[in-house]
Image (cartoon, rainbow, N blue to C red; front, side):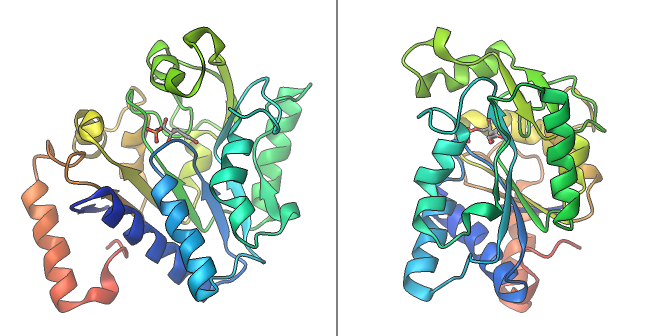
Length: 266
Ligand code: F6R
């Protein structure tokens, strides 16, 4: 696992965008796993800038989003599909048929979840998966206790997640209680994972996930099992890491001696 503690949210976002840019230049038909929430907004802004100013091409890219609230159709302004349209898809040249966001308004959830898994497989698997981390350690909506082998399925959200996400809704009662989410096992099959976290509120859970034991009680700790994970933090989110000085030293030495190795976990 490579842990990069950047100075600011903007630097974190730029570093992640740069890694995606290199992936798309290497493989224009890359399969990207995408997250919603406030964390990746800066990354998406930077990707839009790279598209507009440098012609970064998304026309062959295939996307899979991590999750969606149950019961919200794509047109709902709090649905994750709507979020992706507003924050990325409507501003780059991604081909609409290549976009996959779990459908939260589906009749047969189990059948849909299996279909979603099949689509990821048919696309050849995810090349880069972007993740945020929830205050309770969730990745996607894999709340504490989610099996580390779990697949796409229906999950009940924790009270903490409902409270955390209430800021996007008029009141807490409007926050959906269920979501369709990729599983931890699904996520771990991505060839590369970039997890982002910013702000002091994430510092403790980030430290538990990265430096604590691997446990289903902190879903993000499962990333320790993956061979190619890059975690990019801002200074606030990285401030309680025990080995922060070591991670900074590694990053600076790479920058100085082998810049091409940044983001390539060894
Ligand atoms: C969103 C998702 C969630 C968020 C997490 C952090 O698609 O999968 O796991 O990444 O809840 O949310 P923010 O970024 O709003 O703090």
